[in-house]
Image 1 (tube, helix red, strand yellow):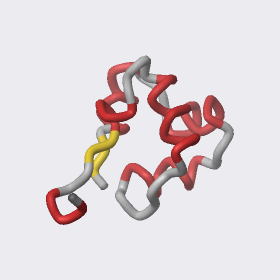
Image 2: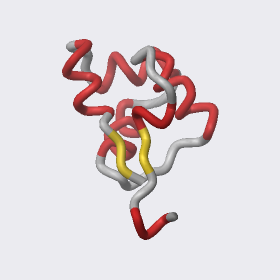
Image 3: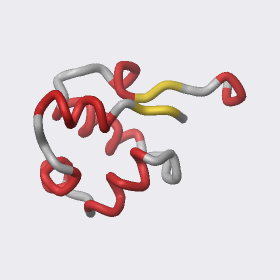
Length: 67
């Protein structure tokens, strides 16, 4: 699964730590999600999308091999 969390964080000028605090996870979790090493739960994906005022599909995209 691909995501554009890093880009969205840059737009809002927030750190991984700030995003992590807003969605109640560790900074390491945000780092792992950004790098594609961890797929967030539905609830966490929704929380992240809400921080950026976007729908989940604007933050997370399936890769061709996952369809």
